[in-house]
Length: 511
Ligand SMILES: Cc1cc2nc3c(=O)[nH]c(=O)nc-3n(C[C@H](O)[C@H](O)[C@H](O)COP(=O)(O)OP(=O)(O)OC[C@H]3O[C@@H](n4cnc5c(N)ncnc54)[C@H](O)[C@@H]3O)c2cc1C
Image (cartoon, rainbow, N blue to C red):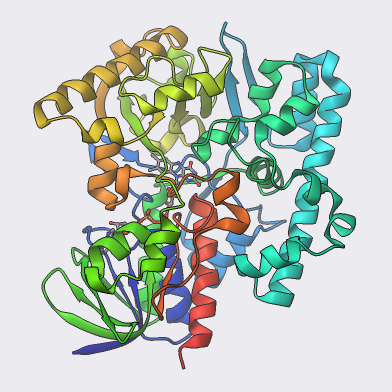
């Protein structure tokens, strides 16, 4: 029976980065991945002459060569930074409001402020005060994170203790005032215009929580880091990072097994001691890092009688998050032909984002905001000359899709995709006639590829009560820990970095 120091279940972003960290620290590590390629959400697929990115729209935390962000530094440690051609994106996003007005925000604080002031001059003072608040809040958040990491190890339960200390509000006034507020609570305090609020809340779609439930701290952090560290893409898409990390793990002596899912975690005397793979082969280890959902890990990989009651009770307090319905579109024309000029777009047909978000619980995307990205705008070489790639979709919960029978599924999927194309046609006339390839992914597609309940693409719902100090990170089976979007802020940057953080802790514990 083969022995490892650490076994990682899943080759998603956090799985790969945790394994790379451990391998570079000299630990014997093996990643088990059920799919035949690495990446989880960080992947791509081919149709015809197009290669479609599955998930990545914008990478956060990279920073520039002159002012490197934490992710750039991490990729350098892994030795993969220079293997990849990074592309700096030159706008944060474009919000397309009902009635046709489009507001594209540049990637500097001054540029974003000026653009908004030009569009909403009567709210100039509030716009300036808002950005000031975002920056001061994020500054305090960084100080607080550093202090809590130094003094307590940064675990949620310890951070909770720090938060309740009497001096907290004095030392961190912005954090005390805003940390547990929702996006709407803060934006409504600052601004009168609903349009302006939509222009500033756009990052809610990166977490799948409508503005009335989206934690302000995540909005502030996204605004701050995408401005300071700039949004990035890369030539070849996220699959290139996944592949480079896989090579880095192997180069440092680690193993990565594909088409080799874990079917069971071996638990003895309340401790995780190994795994059994899909071929029935058993492997022993000192620690396991699960890069998949706690639900799948406990319910499907641990023998029923060995699942700790506390784990069931604790996790039942969290709600499975949203999935997505996405059209991957290859056009036989450049993006200008249909007037698609900005890479990342949020399209509203209604000013009430909270009301339209309710459609996320239904099958058809009649009113939901559309998230549309044209990769060709940032990288004209992403597809053959004279063509372009657009992904356009809406956030949808998995439940109504799970209730369809197989015949209904295909009919429903194409009907839903047609609604998205019809709505795009109104904004970008001619798009339908230029479609050369189209593929459609539904919540069931994500469920099938990732094994995530409900096809959730961002893990558990990340509202105020289940994020920040409340991530589900408690350990219930000794030597079994988690890294990934289910126990952390979702997203690419956050999970490469979180995988590294978890691995450093695990590495200390493995003698
Ligand atoms: C459509 C879409 C758009 C997105 N847009 C963005 C964006 O623009 N910016 C951003 O930052 N984030 C975005 N995200 C979110 C981001 O992709 C995820 O938060 C992040 O990739 C999650 O990484 P993870 O480490 O949790 O692993 P996951 O990607 O969840 O991967 C888990 C891995 O575990 C494997 N696995 C499952 N079961 C088993 C088993 N039993 N044994 C072995 N392996 C198993 C799966 O095959 C998979 O490879 C998007 C996601 C999607 C799907």
